[in-house]
Length: 142
Image (cartoon, rainbow, N blue to C red):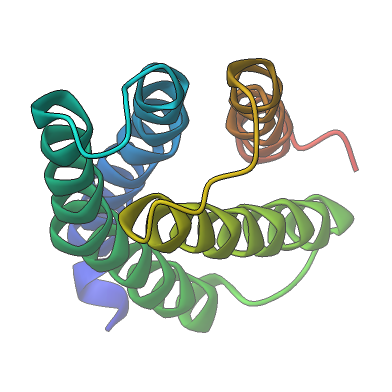
């Protein structure tokens, strides 16, 4: 597998980019969905967009990120505190995606109880995690 290290790394980076795009975009869709009248064409359109983004892009991208990431770890090992900090951030993003999936289901059932402000605030979570992850992977401060 070490012969394919760079190919695996490239696939991992592509999967992470797709995953992060969804993590950035879905909460923004929720910000706009909050203002749509329940039952309106606009609200129903947001439901379709949210479901498709989550199921067709985010879930496969997250799974691919994990698979390729684990393959990389099997090649390079688990040495360095930086990698453990990265794992914690990735686990946090995985949990955050679960939270977003819950919101997709609540919006689909017309049961959202959060404001646009809430979704604007949680929209910053992936940014903070991304900063930590990139610093850990590139700078390796520990």
